[in-house]
Length: 337
Ligand SMILES: Nc1ncnc2c1ncn2[C@@H]1O[C@H](COP(=O)(O)OP(=O)(O)OP(=O)(O)O)[C@@H](O)[C@H]1O
Ligand SMILES: [Mg+2]
Image (cartoon, rainbow, N blue to C red; front, side, top):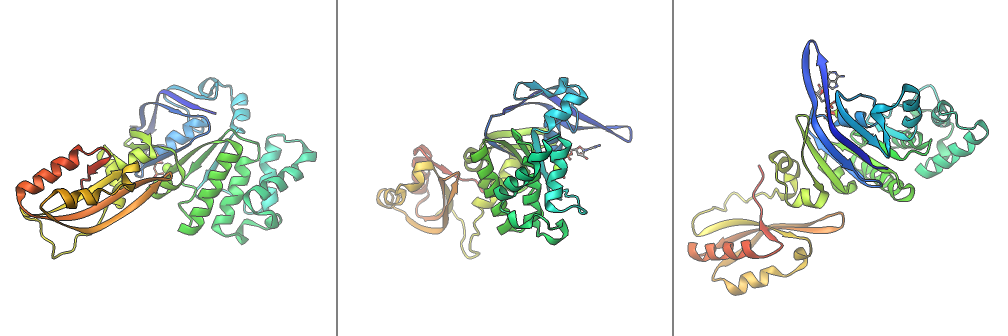
């Protein structure tokens, strides 16, 4: 189901002061996509997410989930609609005094799921998240990753069209994070659920999302497909988030002078798999040595990054740089720090 924000704002009143948690925002999240939201603490990510299921109501503007205008629903209709919008959290929010099965049963019951079908549904969900053997276990005896799997099972209990994830992997170690991200991917593919994920880790975006919005100070300051954002970030905040992949250390003894320059190149998409170095070596009277390099795969598309030391006459170096700037698919990377 698609999610459409039209001119939405959210202002909180805190001790008599207004906080613009979301400045005027129009945004469309497409049906069936995995959309990421990244930003620093306080940027307004959770506010935006909680507006989708109206855990917060907007100060102005309208929000549609599918063709339902959330902002126009009565309390009763909102309660029903919310059952079709699952949510998972960093702290899992499980009921500690209930077993895994009872935790899931709790939301089935709340949604008036037919009583005689609940057991079957619980088994189905636990199978989906790989926890069939943990039915009667209490949360305190589960690992973090297992708790989040219960969280996911519970969020999916009522067959939602949308799944909202607020830092769902932030409390998990990197390996467990990977398994949860691939579970979310599978859920998206197999069940066709639209997923919105909040994170402050670009790695999560890279693994999981197809498009991403970067938030800062209550605004989406940059929006695009994940490859675009990684390879050609525009806003300073975005550059800060992606800089890790461009960050190569320069050995201390290597100096930049007029005759000796360090150039970092980006090779976009197919261009990352072509042999550009041959041309550089052949056509220029320069000494070129490789200082560092790697190829990142983002949504399976290559992004090559190569740091070169180029030594020779200033004019020849300039000629090289001019030619690089004219080559499609090749760009000079600024060092984003
Ligand atoms: N219930 C509230 N009352 C008053 N101010 C709030 C409330 N909820 C959030 N805020 C403020 O709104 C702004 C955005 O908060 P929000 O929780 O959406 O940010 P976030 O991007 O999710 O941050 P984090 O990464 O820390 O979770 C912050 O300045 C926050 O202090
Ligand atoms: Mg938050």
